[in-house]
Image 1 (cartoon, rainbow, N blue to C red):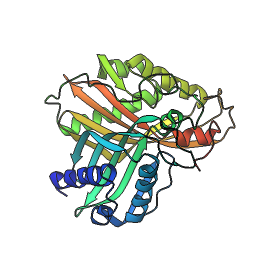
Image 2 (image 1 turned 90 degrees about the vertical axis):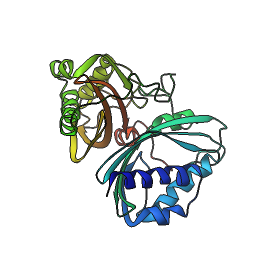
Image 3 (image 1 turned 45 degrees about the horizontal axis):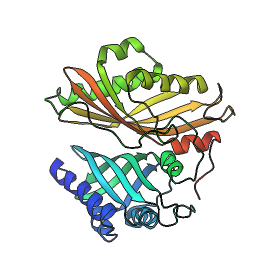
Image 4 (image 1 turned 135 degrees about the vertical axis):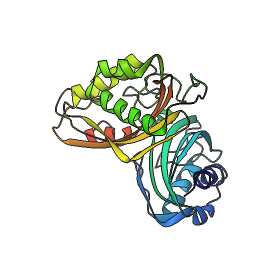
Length: 304
């Protein structure tokens, strides 16, 4: 599908579906066999009805909710949208009674658009931070909410620039994820700008040192942890590139977020969006399904 058509489909679902609460637009924009591969620990059914069920849960819990479009990138059939959901918890949300609290929840989604409809979706959001914001979870973990900081993305460091050829940017984001995963400081020093900014409410990191430390924490708890980029889910536009990863590891090391190791395998997903200037990565936005991670290791209970 042409990029502009895919961009319009994703924008309409955001504006008309999420923000305006028009459930019927799902039948126009979501294919009958559309599958959601992860949604921050939420279970989402197939096709328009599955999307409507998800949308109803959020609009019931947050009747005044709106979904901002913070960034939108399209590359062929794939589109990446970076959002913030802002609303007041005035209704039941996954069994959590109204708290009256205002929330700002960051999220990143990748959608495949074919013939004017979304056919697949991959998404991560700061569900742990959001549930902590409404008092449904203890303030544990390294996230921005748990550590008393703002839960939004924060201002961008760099103005859009010319970037590199798309193939080079895609290769760079893949190499970046790999270097982080294995803790290769030398490789990171070569590809990351000294003034690098990390926009990462889900892990609570804001700079290169904090980002490296967060991955070191994971490796201490899961010595075999591995971030594997799904090569069919790498895209680039302008001076940015995005990559979706499947993360696997065995919790056999130190305690993690208050949970003792059980020696069991854990799997979750992660999305990185980077901006490149002067041949180096100058900033990153990240989202991860930490709710699934926290649930899998026994740090928090499953959603109702």
